[in-house]
Image (cartoon, rainbow over all chains, first blue to last red; front, side, top):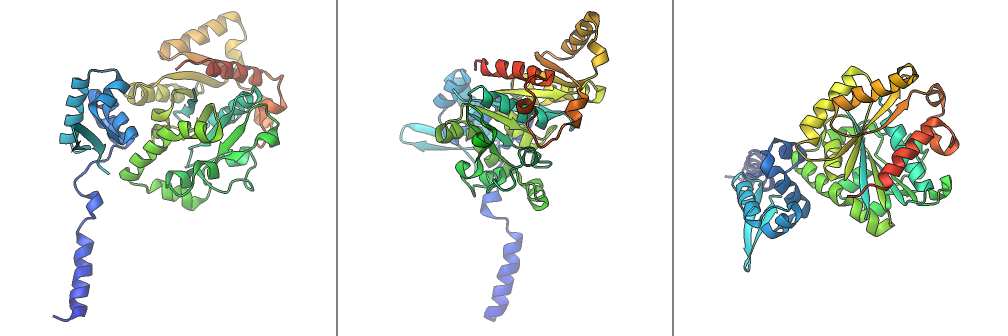
Length: 97
Length: 261
């Protein structure tokens, strides 16, 4: 095929592939926060504010038990609002953006 | 410790911007270093109230877009008004294109904007020495106002005694303030004087309002014709220090100054 044909085919293909940033993750804007179950809202709001957090940091802010916050954070990961990564011995939760 | 207070309402026309600009002026006159922020991107009015078209080089919109620093947005009006404390104002862009732009913002942008608003009070304290932040919001439940409510330490909800307003405030408290566990005070504005001419009238009015809301009532401000007739481009509280409207807002300012977080 000619280069010109391939080039225009590629441009058409790019239009239908969603950008990587928008693919698969949920955003923690205030309307989303309002739609969350009550027990997750405080955790999610503080996680959004701090950006990258541990369960300890959230527990300090909410005054709830660390194990409770760990459960909530993992729930938010399963719902697609946060991602989880290890950094040495720490488990970090961050907003998916 | 820096405090952030938002001035909110369920509907427009309650006198929110008048109250936010005058409370700011009173606090700055009392020696507080105050920053007033215009988050009403759909109907920004502070630029007109403060006559600052020539002073505003950047907008809160630019700050939320990450295109301007806070120091570039905040206008120092201390010398113009001769206040004991600093008086900074951050303005919203009044251009139609800017309003359309805000209306088109997606959820990801709104999430980043929420994060920026949440860190604004500390940034204002660190960079400009501010100790009180007053945020003027859009009425109702929309992104810009909810971002500010969530970021504030306390809100003053301004309402008239119109049934539509009072019911709107009740719904808003239930749907927004309760889920986010945010504190609020109710400020009734433009109350018709015949309602509280007598002792019995005053007691009944306070009882009626208090029965509608579990949030504390911070003030009832009567409707004053001279206030309606006054030039909107001046700060009434600074020009009319002996007016009952100014006394009422001074009491509100005192409550806000002594608020413990």
